[in-house]
Amino acid sequence: MKKLFLFTIGICFAISLNAQSLGNVKITNKNYGLSKMKKASKRIYINSFNVDFEIYKEAVDFKAGGNGGRISGNKSSAIARAALGLDGVDANKMQEKTNLLFNNYVNKLKKEGYDIISGEEAGKTKALQGWDKASGPYIIENRTGIITCAPKNYTFYYKKAGALGLGGLGIQAKLSKELDDAIIADVNMHVMFSENGSNFFSAGGAKVKVLTNLRLIDEYVVTIPKKLKKKKSTLGKLFGSVQLKGAVESYPVNSMVSFSYGKAGLGTTAQFNGSLKDDIEIEGVLKKQKIVAYQKQGSFTPTSFSTFSNYLDAKADRFSKTTKWIDVDPDKYADGFYNACNTFLEKQLNAFFNKLK
Image (cartoon, rainbow, N blue to C red; front, side, top):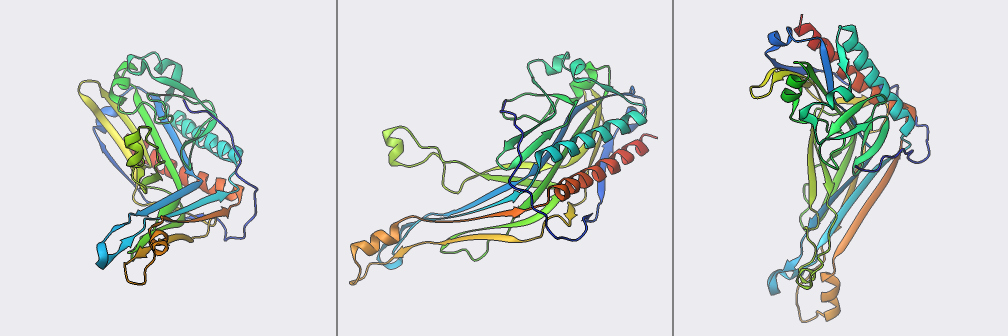
């Protein structure tokens, strides 16, 4: 398990923006077999409650050089890297908002007459044997720049080291059966502040563009530049690093609220999956802007006037990096995060309860 830690990023600055509000909020849901779920016991196990928010984004582009002969000449490799971070996010405030989201969720379930199955009871099932256990409250950097916050008084299980926060993925039917046909609940919400811009007209060089847009995402692919690992063997050193420069790791994520009911072996017999029709934009917290990094490739075409130093200079790898930290108000950021997530949760819970009536 990754080391758990609390953090506060930078110094808090007040910023003059318009009053905070949310963009258009439209939800959607798909379901089947809910008539069977109506007959299910009034017991729910919260299998996962994942809340992520982004504080740092790094993007990279790489253009490989090569030898084009006397006509095209030689080109150097070029790397462009852009880094964008938020300065002022307060860990304690984010933990408080996450706790409040979870308490609202649990209280609404209880108000509808549901009993919440404890993590200790669920941990005794065969389905979760061999799984690791974690309990909130805590904040960790699960992936570079992506912070996962676990609420207070919440216990869950995960299977692989490094997958902390994923919960009992893919075992809802087994859990439902072993918990006396209980309903299995899952929540995933991801608040992102960055998105990749289009990089047109980057011929002859490397270029990246990152845009700011604070929002609760519908669907999104998180991309993180891979760290180069040096090969240890003599042959490996001749051929460079293990991964190509500019390579990224991709992680598809989506915000969703789901309820499952079913028996193992037959698959899930009843399902409610709630999502967003589009991202919920969180306004009045972060100004929309862009950061661009561009690096032109060096070139060398042999002529009677060329010198060896010209060749070496053109062939040398070129690197450009642009970094920017954006000041945010910690209260406005935390409030925006909470308002977007809570609105989504409430709308989906209302939709779920209405379909069971």
